[in-house]
Amino acid sequence: MRQWVLFALLLVAASAHSQSVTGVDKRRSGADFMAASTQAMQKDDTLNPGMLWVKDGEALWQKPTGQSQKSCASCHTPSSMKGVASRYPDFDDVLKRPITLSQRINQCRQKHQQTDPLRAESQDLLSLESFVAHQSRGMPVAPPDDKRLDTFRERGQQRYTQRMGQLNLSCAQCHDSNAGGRLGSSQIPQAHPTGYPVYRLEWQSLGSLQRRLRNCMSGVRAEPFAYGAQELVELELHLAVRAKGMLVETPGVRP
Amino acid sequence: MARTLINAPKTAKRGDVIEIRATIGHPMETGFRPDENGKILPRNIIQNFSCRYNGELVFSAEMFSAVSANPYLAFHTVATESGTLALTWEGDNGFSQTENISLSVVA
Figure 1 (cartoon, rainbow over the protein chains, first blue to last red):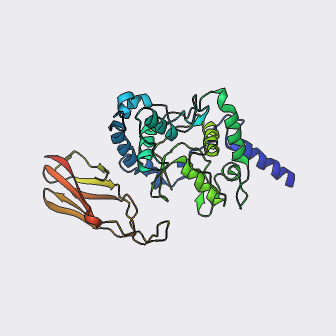
Figure 2 (spheres, each protein chain N blue to C red):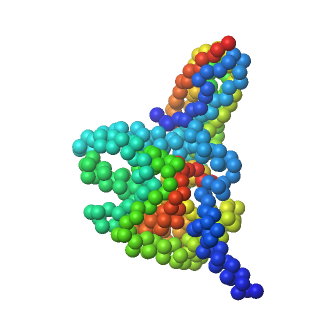
């Protein structure tokens, strides 16, 4: 009996984050786990507080900055940003490692606008990131088919299933094995990063995926990796693979 | 200038009840929270919201420390004549912002 239960649990774990044998996609966005009122908030652009950041980002997009006095709009059109956020993290040819969308924005600032990078989680960086990611809303998450990313993805997957912190829990134990269950009063979602940067009601603010990952880490009493740390980028890479084909919702609202 | 998201109809029939929904970007710092050095952050909230329809007050609300950041308000009024709805938020540190929306009323 006990062995059978264990086997069943393993089966559930194996099929929780990918398509099951019957071909039905069992993956669900975090939005599906929310109360109807929170879903309504995300759906309506005049209710979604994340749109405040998108609007800010739109203004920053036009603003000439740095020594070159170039704005983002001097080189890019907003429509050319369609599908960019659904691709990231992507491999950087110069750094020879994957970088996130916010790191890419800061690269542009340093190289082309010739100014200082924006601080992680700063209002301006979140605004620009949400404006860029908003252009991909409704498009499927499409992690690039790049062999150079494989080793980083493997490390991300390893980290996802590795226990950490004083509570000794891995990401997979909650988000694969117990997704849909409850942790205290809140439902455990399947951890698909489709709405980032999200407006989280608990934060009363917009925040990046890395902020969310660090949140989970302090939740299991582990020391969170620093913003921009390679470990977090690799986790993001793995999450993007898990969420491949799901639709981008930026700016998402989460409880 | 704080950012706002306002949703209101541009046109309405005379006598129609219209809904106005407004969100404003504001930290609504309660005045009770310590910063990372343990010092209490000074209160910074919106205290008052009002909506004037061609100068006449049709809706107002008081807000306090327990109201969330980026407060959202929805309210109704009756479309009587074409004109302007002036939404005003006022608060600590001399915060004051007015957004005007125009409404045209057809018979």
